[in-house]
Amino acid sequence: MLIATAVHMTAHLLLPAVAARIFFANRWLFAWLIMMATMAVDLDHLLADPIFDPERCSIGFHPLHSYVAIGIYAGALWFRPLRMIATGLLIHMFLDGTDCLRMAFWT
Image 1 (cartoon, rainbow, N blue to C red):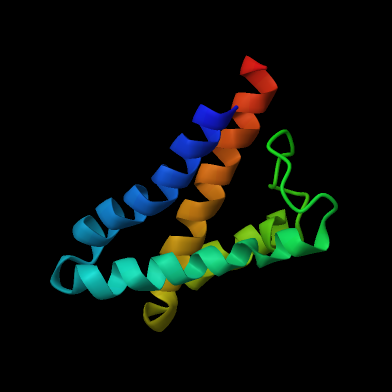
Image 2 (tube, rainbow, N blue to C red):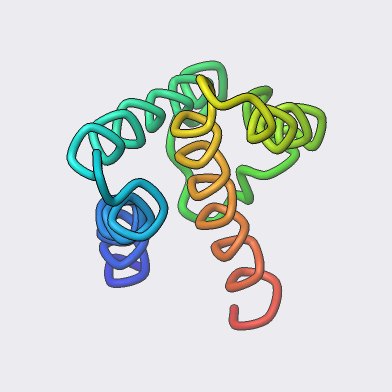
């Protein structure tokens, strides 16, 4: 479980960097920093008990990881000023979703 958590956290750093280079090439560093700031979406974990549970699927459990919230993040892609933020949030939700799949199929 420790290795899976380390890979997950590393992906939260690297995948936004790759997306920033591809989708926001002329401002990739700024875009990457904005996407790193979107990791604050995990503050909703503070509402859970325990705060961190490697066996819990965040998608649909935490308020900012709800399906409604994910829909709002996807809708924000249509608004240019929010595009970097929305991209970071959707990458975050995608990565958290892969954890849910891992738990469903490989544990």
